[in-house]
Each structure stands twice: as C-alpha cells, then as structure tokens.
Length: 392
Image (cartoon, rainbow, N blue to C red; front, side):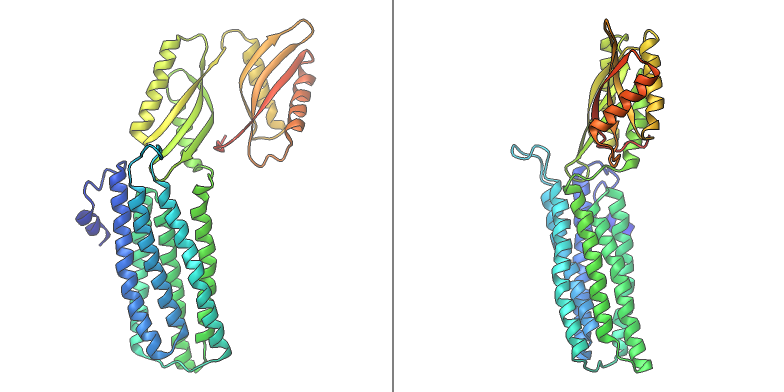
C-alpha cells in the first residue's frame, strides 16, 4: 500500500534531494493521517457514546487530536516548502519543526480533558454496555494505526523528517493504548470487573507521557541540537579522503529545516604546498558536499608547517599526552615562536561538552603537562568548544 501511494501521488519520488519532493512526501503523509484518523474518530465516538465507555471515547478524542495534528503538519510542510526570500535567505524549512511542536503541545492540551473525564468516571462509575461491534472497531483501529506507524516511519526515514518520525511514534503509541482499551472491554465483560475508568486514566497518562517526549523531540532542532554523530563522522571521513588534507576540526552544522543544512569546517593542509592547488582541493570539497550530500559547506584553510621536526614532534607529543587529562581532548593550529628566554608553543585545544574542567584550570594543567617534559616551552592555549562532538 505504501509503495502504491508513493507511485500514485509523488512525482519523481526518487529525487530525495529536491525540496519539492520532500514537501510532496510530507503532504501525502499528512493527508493519509487526516483521512484515517477522521474515520477512526467517527467510528470510536459513535461506539463510545452508545456504550457509555469513557475509555473508548478517550481513544476517539485521541484520534481527533491526531487528525488535527495531521492538518497542522500539512500546513507546516506547505509553508516549509516556500522558497527563500529577502527576509528569510535560508528558506522556511523550520516551519516543519514548528508544526511538529504545535502538534505535540496540542496532544498535551487535549489530554488534560481526557484525564478529567477519566477521574470523573472513577468517582462516579457507570456501567458500560458491551458490544461486539465495539470490539470489531477497536481491532480495526489497531490494524490501521499499526500500518500508519510503519507508513510514517518509512517516509520519515526516507526524507529525514523528525515530524513524520514523531507521527510514527504517536501512531505506535495509539496501537498500545487502543489495545489496552480493547483488553479492558473484554475483561470487564467476561470477568465482570469494571475497568473502564481505570483504563481511560491509563490511556490518558500514556498519552501525556508520549506528548512530553514529542515536545522534546520537536523542540530540539529549534534550540540548535547537536548534529547526528554518524553525520559528523561521515563528513570527517569524507574530508580526510581528499589529497593533501592532514586534519579537520571546528565543524559547525546549522539546521534550517530538513534538507536545508549549512556547515563550516577548518581543514588542515601543508603550508609548503602550492596555495592555488590547496585552494582547488577546497573548492572540490565544497562542491562535492553540495552535490552529493546537499550540504552547503564552507571550508576554512588552515596551513600547517610540516617541514622541520620540532613543530611536528611537539604537536605529536601534546596530541598524545593531552589525553591524560581527558581522553577526548584534541589540539590544532600549533605553531612555535622561539624567544630569548623561552619558546612559546601556541595552539588551540578543543574541549568536549561535559568535560567538567574550568577553562583556566584546563590551561594550567596543559601548561604544567608540557612544562614538565619541555622546561623551556611555555604554552599559549586557546580553548575551543566542540559543537559537533567528533567521535575521536
């Protein structure tokens, strides 16, 4: 079914780098969500009203919130697909993240009413009329939601959409909550134990827990969350594969929406090499990343003196021994400035997040480490922050 819908409604579906194709996938998923959830809402609401079951009614309202969420997602994808303009030169891709956040908050707001209704049912219990039609509707709902979860997860992974992955997780949660409601209906009927109010409360609490998780997931890219470690590793590996590249550091990735990422990185190359040839390699790196990964990458050239042994020896020594302070510490841009009384060793040290060492303390410990091995050397250290969390 998924492949049929893609072939039917997505033109040029294999061109995943296209913003138009990305938007088309998002719209398709949203429309499927609107139709399926609207049908499930009507079916469950009628059954819930006729049987007097608060848990089925709560599950119906959950489907209504999902339908509303799909409408918001549809608007989000449509607005995110707008081209860049003078006021928004990086495009409008973050509308997709905003729509996901609105959906998550909407789930929490509606869930408050579900909690209230469930508490009322516990305080003032009323009998629930058992109907086999209710069982059939709930069973069909589980099947539909299971398919929707797989559908949204597949498309979400395909176009790297956090909004669709959140929708997939929400559908998976619906499978669990509806299965719980169905179990309660069967147990209440056959065991003569009234569980409707308790199950309604359980479903509401489960939705509340999931809603907070969705808020966190959709808020993360808006706050500038760390990039995917696998993406960071692949970028580093690719850059190091170019001729003349000795090292890379200071990678920063800025996310302006799915498929709209901008990045900058420093690339170390031998200072003795021809500048024009090194610049040509940098141009190739920037062009290849744009064509192959749809990543707007700006490369800063860092010349490294490789002739002579003193600079290389101290660079290698510090790179190795600085890990005695923290195994994740790295250095770059090292140069040596000889003086009459001592020699300055100037370099940057990348401090990983969560290092737990104050900047002045870290400088002191590095200076002490080097000074004990090289008494005539004085360290001049600049502490860098690691924004990409390189998996060293």
